[in-house]
Length: 411
Image (cartoon, rainbow, N blue to C red; front, side, top):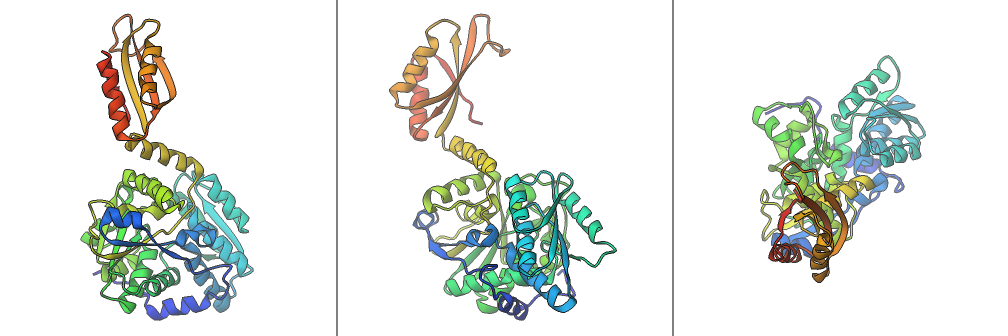
């Protein structure tokens, strides 16, 4: 087992909660039952709405606990952090509420909405590098040789203890819970929550979720030491840290029962499902827990389960990307390529076939340049709104019945 000399226990988490004396910094977030997820999973599913926390994520908990201790014990008057977004906002708000300055280093690729929000909470923002690691290196250099305090996103006992206060809430919200499902990036959130449940309800199963293309915990557990990825590629930017620490890995190994992974496609479907059924706007990292319980990776049938929606800072550009992907996956957004003899009236005829099914054509493109086409042939590429897979299949059959070669090109 990985060991860490400066670990976290329930007394640290309780002390952190006692520091949360200002509800404009950290508030208790609600829990709601989801009958839609009940039907999909066969369990009783409750959603912990931490995406409704101030700044839109749980990160303020750890940041406030860390900075409050630094101010009280060391007289710290400036903090520095690196973040792609959620930690940035948490540190900015906590520092401003505690009356000190903050500088946040963010990658140049960070969503503009998160950059603007971080500045609005009172931080000076510097945009450096193309990923979290480059931002982290720059932030650490800023602190070197100064009196400023570096606030790590997860590799700090005070951060982990602050995040663990969410575990206390989750237990108190639903003491009979059988399984809690928690997204994992750097591991600070699940390390704190699992530590709280180990004390309050050790029989509760704690399951972590990582995005497949950012997953480091399964290999780290197997090797007994933290491993890092050279690059990560996921729509769940809030858990795209590319690594865990010795501290968080040791607590995961000790208290977490299972870790599963979900694909970006599964995360996208979960975002859309939560938007449609639960009426909640949740970012990729926040939706990972819901993605897990409706995937084949995690069985919660017959259980009382709580999925943690840990963040709601969904960039509108990313929302558009997710919606296009998820609607295409459902065939509610259908792309068809029809091969035709390039003669007048063909587009009108095929459009009429589609209209007969009461589907809406969004766009159509006429292409004569594809190498597989013979002279005098063309492709018509249609993008169509449908009611779902049944209507999509009916449209394709009708076009073929009219003698046309048609290819479904959603992929």
